[in-house]
Length: 182
Image 1 (tube, one colour):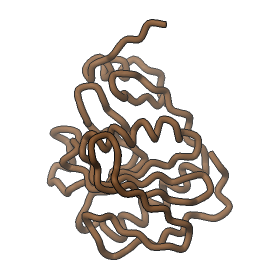
Image 2: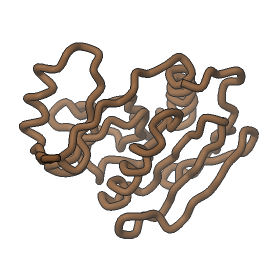
Image 3: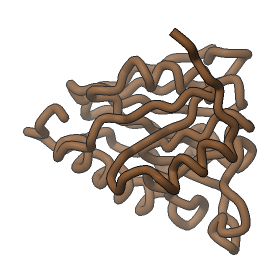
């Protein structure tokens, strides 16, 4: 097997030629084709976007399924991110690690890739990442050190959490019930 590393510029050229609806991400120079977003995944992203906007929208930008420029070889598209506010809404350039307050990945059918992304987020110094599992549990990773996070907090529905850098008010973790798994 021959593997080729792509640069960010090469990847962006590939995106321009990709069929519409194809969801591609660049992780450490490798291109990943992500699974189509199902109704359960979409529902949870919508729920989280609404809750995060309601709680933190006056102090952060809610950034939904858009790219983060982590490095010259990594351009992931997390399901959600909370970004430091900027007047141009990141029109001049994509957000970089120092702009990110929180990343959220809905990890129903993409757990393996999301764990790879978790390593990249830690290496980039992203302060906090939430992974949402198929059963409705939420894993919060905090305090990046090298390629991992020092703290992992597990939440079940009904528990409260707030992003470390925004601290208050807490989000009552209550994902939509009866959500299909994908």
